Image (cartoon, rainbow, N blue to C red):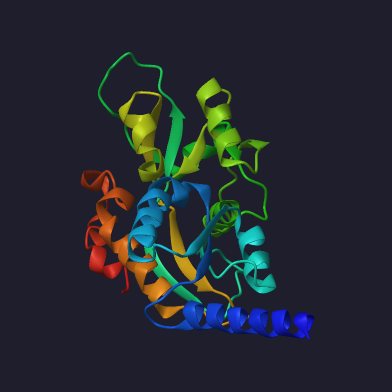
Length: 257
């Protein structure tokens, strides 16, 4: 009888957790994934907002590449992920949030204390510049490969590193440059560690989309809070705005709330 009683209590507890998770204004737990370059901007403000509005929620965050994040969504270990909307990405619950142009990120050799934005770099020049990029299962690499193929380009990829921190270590060493949004490295660029050159003729963009789990219902309050957090950080994601093409200066065309 005692065991039966504990089993009933456990069932009641589990049912309560599900109600909290799926109701519109309560979050019992949340597992959220994103690329490290998005996490660098979004994670701390999002975690703070979640903790303020849902003080009892159990929160888990995961940095990962597209492949890992999509697998985690499919298995149910993630509720929501922000992923690259890369060619070949198939997911039913996918909503584009924002786009950013990619910059050539290089070690900054100047002694200047001001942020370093060199002259734009034309896409064809990437064929003679040593690059470090993730492997092909990573969304960033898929975006770059598809863009290069469309434009008949063969970027000179000297190294492959799947870790965001490892890529930045290679760049900091001067062994190679990489392609990332300048916004993800604002602190490093402002401090003079890296310089950023906008890729042009043609430009290359990454689009980040919100994907929700297909194996279980996802709390609508959580979805709304993430989208609002992204909108609140528009200036961070679009930094430096004065270098943005005219068609990207209107945030309303990039974020859908």
